[in-house]
Amino acid sequence: MNNLLEIQGLSKTYGSVTALNDVSLSIEPGHIIGLLGPNGSGKTTLIKIICGLLQPNTGTVLVDGNLAGSANSKAAISYLPDKTYLDEDMKIESIISMFDYFYDDFDMDRAMEMLSSLNINPKATLKTLSKGNQEKVHLIVVMSRRAKLYILDEPIAGVDPAAREYILRTIISNYEPSASMIIATHLIADVEPVLDEAIFLQNGSIKLFKPIDEIRAENGQSVEGLFKEVYRC
Amino acid sequence: MPWNLNSGSPIFVQIIEHLQIDIVSGKYKPGDKLPSVRDLAGEAGVNPNTMQKALSDLESTGLVHSERTSGRFITEDDNMIKNLRKSLVDVQIEKFFKSMEKLGFTGEEILELVKEYSQK
Image 1 (cartoon, rainbow over the protein chains, first blue to last red):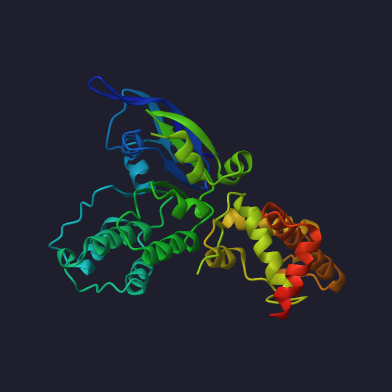
Image 2: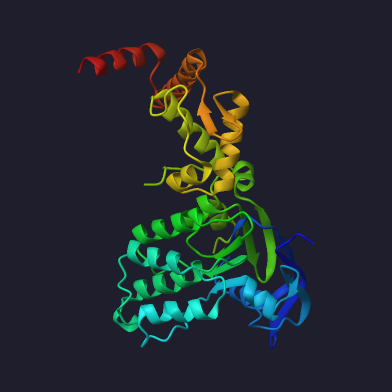
């Protein structure tokens, strides 16, 4: 099997609430995919199941051929959660060495280069940084791994437009044909040019999974435009 | 600064238009080597696969060609670039006339207005 991610018949309920309803999808290596959907559509639930942090009620998830939650699947995924888990009393350089120690695929040079490009002092303690800069630190350590599957949950929401541009450029220039990336975000217009495909989630089901340029050609508008139309409130 | 790719048309189409203008305007001269796909994608702020697709498209028109190991080059055929410039001009003029007609001007009035403008 060549797919990096293979999801079959995935469902998840929280009590009487259905978060995911019979989701199936596969992702090949070398793709950057936008996971799009309104609040409460199931994006974070889907991501957490792929990362092995939640158990589905039914269905299977294979990451590079390994069951989600297994050690091999976790080693293959570099995950940026929607809320940071880093200890804010740690210095940036200690966080970096912790990641370097923990992950075999961590690229120290890449991390240091990104820190200096974004003007973040490695000697600083995390809690002395602004919220946006704290998010950048977490994104830097996640992007500095040479993983097979990157999963970023709202990676650019809290950072300024110039840093956003830098981060998206970093994603493009670090892109490897053997790796894929899933980006969950509401900032569609910003990420749209870097995506291969978009997944629209609605009430826990996949409404659409298509190449960006196909969406644009069929609808004569950007993916953000289509999103606003599909999810009109 | 990423390229301005804001319209609703497919991104690879907008990339092609951008590169055509770069060639016609002389940013890339006949025979020049193009940057790598990754560098161009980084400069444009687009997905490398999309950039690849746009370049393959330009290749099929003959405007750029690739040498197996040394990269992609702009055509040295001046005529082809001249023709491209002509077709880009046609597109602009058509757009201009359409929007002027929307404002209620006839062909002759438009010509007169253009003349006045150019003498300002």
